[in-house]
Amino acid sequence: MTSIGSLIIPVLNEGGNLENILRPLQPLRQRGWSIVVVDGGSVDDTFHKAKPFASKVITSPPGRAKQMNAGAAEASGEVLLFLHADTLLPIDFESEIQKFIESDLQWGRFDVILSGNQLMFNVIAWFINTRSRLTQVSTGDQALFFKRQFFEELKGYADVPLMEDVDICKRSRITSPPFFSHYKVITSSRRWEKNGTWKTIWLMWCLRYAYYKGVDPKELHRKYYS
Image (cartoon, rainbow, N blue to C red; front, side, top):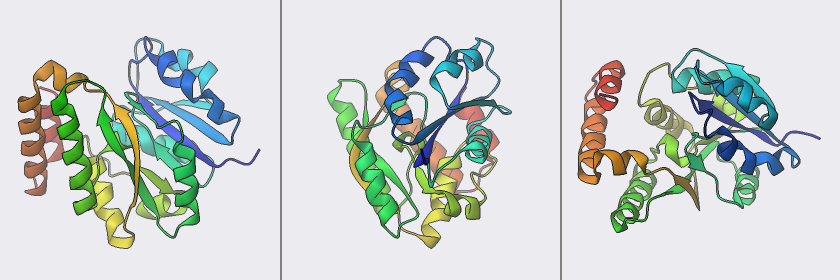
C-alpha cells in the first residue's frame, strides 16, 4: 500500500502509557499511514514497548526538535504530521489531511482543546486557536503537519531545546500561509492543573516574549522545566 504520510511521535519515558497512546492509532496503519516513534533515550523500556504498535521505532539524542527531525528522516509518504505523546488526533482528521494534500498550502495545524473539564480551559483554548490564526504561529500541541518537500526545504526544525514550533511556523509562513483546520486535537491539561492556570499562562507569555526579544532558547528551556 502506498503511504499517505507519517505520524511522527517523539517520546521519552512513556513506557507506562505507550499502549494507550499508540493503540488507538493502529487502524491508520491499514489505511496507508506510517507511525514513527522516536525515543529520546528512555530508561523505562519505551523503545521495546513501542515496537508492536509502530511502523518504525528509532532512537535519537534527546530533545523534541532532534527527535522530530530524526523521525522525519525515516518517514514515508507525502505528509509529515508531528504528534506529541500527550495529544490525541480528531477521529476524522484524515478528511482534513486530504483537503490539505489537494490544496496549494504547504503546512498546517489543528485547533486544540485541553483535556481537563475546567471552564477556564475552554477560554485558554479559544485564545490559543485565535492567536494562531491571527499570527500564523502555532504550537506543537496543535499537531503541526507539512508536505514533505516543503519540510525538507525548510531543513526541518531548528535544533533548539524550546520554541522549535514557533521558529518553524515563522519560517513557514514566509512561503505559505497555513492550512487552518477547525478539527480539534485534545492535548493534556496536566501541566495547567499541576502548576495552576494563571501561573502557567503567565509563564507561557513570559517565555514567548523573551523568545521574541532574543533570549537564548536554552535559557528558556531551563525556566520552563525549573
